[in-house]
Image (tube, rainbow, N blue to C red; front, side, top):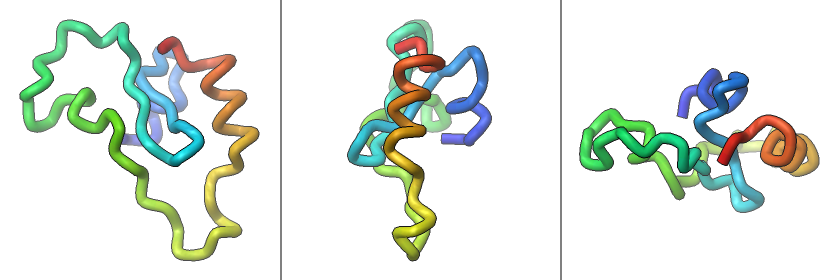
Length: 71
């Protein structure tokens, strides 16, 4: 998922504690079978850096889910 989709105020997505993509339920009109649809990414794990020290900080992901993401 493009970073901009995760970070915008529109917030169509987020990342869960297992580093899987969450897509907002507000995206209901999209064709789930469209090859480039955002819904296609739901539940997929993000690609993490090789070094764990560069992984997303769980507290930051949690803050985003609670304060920005409109699931």
